Structure formats: C-alpha cells, structure tokens
Amino acid sequence: MIRAALLLLAFAGPAAARETIVAGLSENMVAITTNFTGSQILVYGAIRRDAPEPPGTLEVVVTVEGPSGAVTVRKKSRRWGIWMNTASATITRAPSFYAIASSGPMAQAMSATDNLRYQVTVPRAIRSVGVASAVADAPDFLDALIRLRTAEGRYIIDEGGVSVVQQTLFRADFSLPADLVEGDYRVRMFITRNGQVVDQHQEVIQVTKAGLERWINTLAQTQPLIYGLLALVLAVVAGWAASAAFSVRRR
Amino acid sequence: MQLYLPIAELSVNAFTLLGLGGIVGVLSGMFGVGGGFIITPLLFFIGIPPAVAVATGANLVVASSVSGLMAQVRRKAVDFRMGLVLLIGGLIGSGTGIVVFAMLSRLGQIDLFVQLCYVFFLGFIGLVMLRESLTSLWRARKPAGPIRRAHIHTWIHKLPLKIKFRASGLYVSVLPPLVVGAGVGFLSAVMGVGGGFIMVPAMIYMLGVPTKVVVGTSLIQIIVVSGFTTVAHAVTSQTVDMVLALLLIVGGVIGAQVGSRIGVMLKAEQLRVLLSLMVLAVGIRIGLDLVLTPVEPYSLAPGAIH
Image (cartoon, rainbow over all chains, first blue to last red; front, side):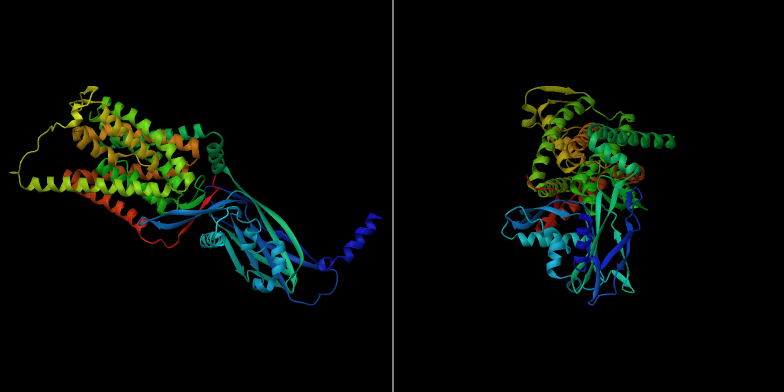
C-alpha cells in the first residue's frame, strides 16, 4: 500500500520525476596545510531523463556555501575631524564564503520566486536570516557586507561559469581562496526549465586544518596558557641563539 | 613561497614576512629599539587582522630584545635595580592595558584608540628627539657652545622613597621610574609595541639615566612586559600566531646583525636624527588615515556585538 502510494507520488510529482541530477565532486575533503594556497573544486554531473527532453530552456546553477557566522558591520563617519566607527549592525548569519556559477544570466536561469525559495543568490542567502540589530539604514549595512566580501573574493558570482554539454552533462570549476574558514561547505546544484527549479542535489565538502596547522590551532584554542608560554620560549631561544651565534662569529 | 598562517587564517608570502622581520631587525640593530612600532602597522598593511598583529608583534619584540640584551650584558651596560623598578610598574601597566584593550575591542573603537596612541606618541617623541638631536649635531660643529649641566634638579628630585641606582649613578625616588614603567607597559599591551621608543627618551630626559646604560636597562623591562603581553593575549584572545612570529623572528635576527654594522658606521647624533625622522613619518602616515576621507567607510568584524 505504502509502496503504491510512493510510486504514485513519484509519478504524480511535477517535472521532478522527469529530470534528475546525478552529480559528483572532484574532492570531498580539503585539508589546509602549511603550504595551502587555495583549492580547485570541480563540480560535475549529468541530467538523467526518463522521458524525451521536455520543452523550455535548460539552465544549471551551482552554489558553494561556507560555514555561516555572525558578522558585525561598522560604519565610519567624521566626528571632531577624525574618522571613527559611529554606527554598527549585526548580521546574525552570513556565509563566510559563497560562490554561484550558472550556465546563463541569473535573472534568466532562475525565477525570483525560486531564488527566494531556495535562497540562491548572495543577497537571498544572507537576507533570508535577516539583520538582527534594528538600525535605520540596515540595507546599507547588508550592501556593505556583500560589497566588502565580494572585493575580498569571498562572494563570487560567475554567470556562465557552468558549461552544459549536449543538454545532459554539466561542469563548474570553483577556486576556493587561501584564507578559508574551517567547516562544512555545502554544494548545491539546481537544474531549471524556464527559470523553474526542476531538481536539486546537495553535496558536502569538508574543509579542515591538517598537520602542523591543526596542531597549532588546537593548542591555541584548548591550551592557551601552554601555547602562550611556548611562543614565549620560542622567542627567547631564538633571540639568545642569534646573539650567541653572531658573537661566536665575531671572535 | 606561500604559507598559511593558522591563527590569522590567511596565506601570505613567506619571503614578505622574512623581509618585514628583516627591516625591523635592521632598525633595532641600528637604534636599540624593539621595532614593534614599525612592525605592527606593517602587519596591518599586509592584511593581518589587527588583534593578531598586536599580539604577534609583542612576541617578535621579545626575541629581538633578548638578542639585544645579551649584547648589552656582555658590555656590563645594564642597571638591574632600575630594570626591576621599571618592570614592577610595567606589569601593572600591562595588566591594565589588556583589560582596556578587551573593553575597547567590544566597543569597536580599538582601532581608533590604537591609531590615536600611535599618532600622539610617535609625533611627540619624534619631534622632541629631532629637536634634541639637531641641536647636538649643530653644537658638535661649533665646539665653543655652552656645555649642558649633567644634573638639573627639578621637582622629580623632591619626591619621597629615594633609593640608589648604582649602575646609573642616580639617587632618586622610585616613583618616577614606576610611573614611566607603568605607562610603557600600558602602551605595550594596547599598541603591541615593546615601548623602547618611549622608554629610551623617557629614561634619558625624565629620569636622567646615562645613555650608556639606557638601552640595556630598558630591554629588561621590554622583554618581560612583551613576554607577559604575549602570554596574556594568547590566553584572553588566542591571537598569537606562532608561524607568523617564527618567520618574523628569523628575519629580524638576521636584520639586527646587519643593522648593528650600519649603526657602527654612523655618528650617534646622525642615528638619532634618522630615528626621529622615521618615527615622525610613521606617525604622520597613521595620522593621515584618521583625517582623510576613507575609500570604504564600512568595515567587518566577526561575531556579534554584545
């Protein structure tokens, strides 16, 4: 009975049952080591069809989203002739990294309603959780956050970054910057027909510090006193060794 | 060669850091200052978060000062008693500074406060030193000029709790060195500097300590206070980046030896003119940032306001 109902649902469902995503990632793990300079991620996939290709323009949108956290945005203004921080707003959750690639212009690839529903574009991904602080010009602070993070290369929009072959195969390349934050990076893929989302698929990339980086970071967080003393000993020994080495040379 | 810094969470060129450490080392070798007042703004400039730059700068100052102190001890140019008094004041000041630093960080005004401190102290000390060194340069050319008295008695000499500082040849109250030490300790914690550029003129002009023992004696205080600051920042805000510190230290240690060779070739007055011009230039540069309209009035900080 249940199986019959499920089967019915599957067939009765809208376009979802007709085109689905089969996808993969070039890497599921990114290890941040001492010589880490960023990482290339290849997102690839195929569109599986049970029936002949339906009408409408096919577009593919892929997003990569880093761990979110609260961000304080501060604004400087002139006071007593000096520029100082005079206003601030807290954005409760904003992704530390966000990249979007699409096969065509975003306005065409996804309708505004679906963009809102799936929180795809950058302003949607942040605004969906809103500004906590009741600041009069809150939108300015949000715009500033997006502008600053875009300038830092943390928010990337690459319209045309997804290439679709034969209306079936697609691939998108992402370069993750060197100053990555640790955590789970969510990769979402959407296929749309005339701007309507037909299917979506999700994968996760784990970004972790490894080796010496991990050891130092863990020590600094869990044993701050020992870490501080170790840094101190390092400095004293280096200073003493340098002085001793050069006085030997001078003799 | 790019290197990922675990605490600053960004990737920088290792040779850039070695070079920065080297520049600071040359300066400390030439002038006998820790070089913190140069390295912290330079670290801001290459994109290291201010909190990490301040804490890691303190760590670098420890290394370069230990190296400098060793050389001074060999020359017997250290007044340990004076060093101890300055130190007690320094620890009090440093503890206060860390509390103020944490408080201003929460208010979002730490950058402004640090910048104002830089502009004020660099400008003031730069001007005083420039004036003094130019006059003595001028006097050196005209040997017939009046000779300055070794001891000028002021209100400072009327304060109670006098003790003998044998190596410095002084008999003064412990209060002025305590206050000077506390002031330098406070600035060390807030600005990420050892305070050598404040301590050295303060000891010469305010306490009357002979120039010969000033550098070595101020280094004692600088080492301990910077060391204390390093550990305290590591404990309270986890902002000491060991990889960053190590690279800066290696560069600094090599630079210090080059700097001391250059220093031998120049006259003391010429050195002081150069140091004061450099101090002034850094001060003016930071001051302009405060006064000129910024390109981007907004800035981001992780975390929410409490």
